[in-house]
Amino acid sequence: MAPLKKWPLFSSWTFLPVLSWGLFISANVVGWFTDTIHLNFIGLLCGFIWVGGGALCFWAVQKEQDLAGTGVRSMGISILTSFLVGVFLFKESTLLYFSIPAILAILLGLSLLAPQGIHFFRNWRSLAAGAIFGSYLIPYQLSEMNYMDFIYPFSTGIFITSHLLIFVLYKKRAIQITPIKGAIFATMGAGVLWMVGTHGCFWALNGLGYAIGYPLTQLNLLVNLMWGIIIFKEYPTAKERLKIVFAAMIILIGALFLTLARA
Image (tube, rainbow, N blue to C red; front, side, top):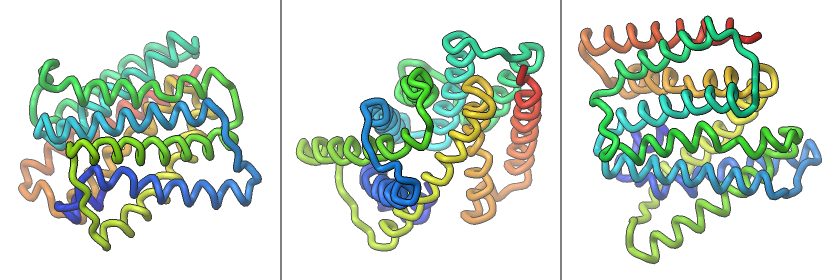
């Protein structure tokens, strides 16, 4: 997401389809080397659902006028949703005396990072986005397919759906397209990085399961905070940084307990 911070005039609605170019190109490169360039309904469906979550997130940023809070609320709900899906839908076995305190600690740490409280009727967009991001891989998990057979159609689904969404919104004059040369190349690079991270996400799911592996992958918020502090010089005061360090420690303790919860 760094390009959106670096170029404030580069709209999130331009960011989404350009990002999809980066991930689609990298998916083709990986697919060519691994002979996995083929389509299937499950991958396309999950890509469609993911774009729905992304659109809700960008809409939330506009309507809720709370960028940091939107990300925290979305991530907190996605972590909680994925844990509940893994335990109750997929019947994954976890040591509850570790996993429940772990999830509570992560959610507590995230709540300390949120600048405002949750008001459902105002924040429903970010909450719904989190629910989607925490559950969009359910069709993939139910299919039990190899993740390498899933990545290419998933990327293609994101690529097609994001362009269709932007086309419809642009035709209705609901959004503006803001091409900025530097931002476009940086965002395509972000798409490549996103694809690398996606492979890591599926390795985690295969090794740790949905209830534990997916929530751990969502802790990328800590990396986001490091970018904000080190690169963009956000949270300049000692009080602000101390609060972030305290919240991050609680989140990391929760993550540690979650890794111990694997039965």
